Amino acid sequence: MKKLDLDKEIEEIILAYEKLVLGIERKALNDTSGRAYGGIIRAGKGRLVESIAKHIVILACEKLGLDPNMLEITKKSVKIPIKKDYIDRIKNEKVKEYIKQHIKEYYYPLTVDWMVFVADVPIMAIECKAYTENAMLKRILVDFTLLKGIYPNISFVLFQLESQLGGDYSELKEVPLGSPSTHTLLSYFDIDLNIITLLKGERKVDKPIHKKEFFKPLTKESLNNAINKMAEIIKQHIPEIQKRTLIRW
Image (cartoon, rainbow, N blue to C red; front, side, top):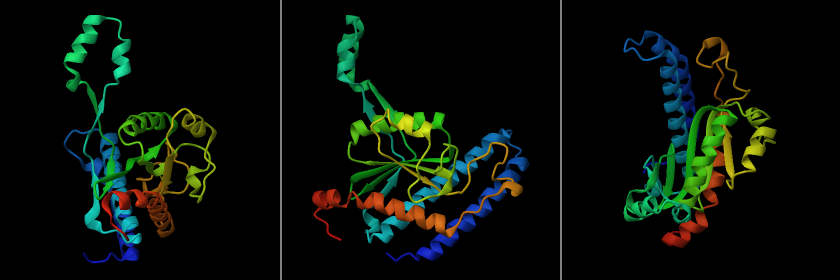
């Protein structure tokens, strides 16, 4: 497969971002399907962030010299099984026995935005957001905790255009100090969360970036930082991949 030109790929991501974000409001205003304006805006930004995240993973693997044929980025659902100790705690014997007899039906279908596999080795779960505030983060942490019960060794990534988490997540520092609320939430979950933010400046409800006067540029520096962070996360899993596949690179 042809080697990707990193600079060209980054430029194309920026062009796509500018075209899509600045065109989202026009599309929403011209829509005649009866869909709510806000829903169209959210859907457009959501798909954009997912697309950028997927491309960043591909470019990070390219930077590491990873064979792209080994890479799988998927949305497939993961079955989270019911916990056996919960069944044991059920006081009603009729309910308990019914669940035991139908145990294969008792699971929660969990889907995150992207699951990343390399040579069939699960390495990463990515949740993509146009922006994230702490109430949303609680849900993300619950989902990741459920997923960790199935894949205890994978990495967890929150990939966002803008941050509304407070602190300095929106300053695009190499090592953000974070915010009091976010760190407090994280302290209650056994999740090592990697937060990747693309746009500088805290998200403001009354200054949406799809409006020209509040538009925020997506920069080459920001995308390069995202690629480097993603490559570092993937790199942590290389020993496991090598061990399970006997592949060296």
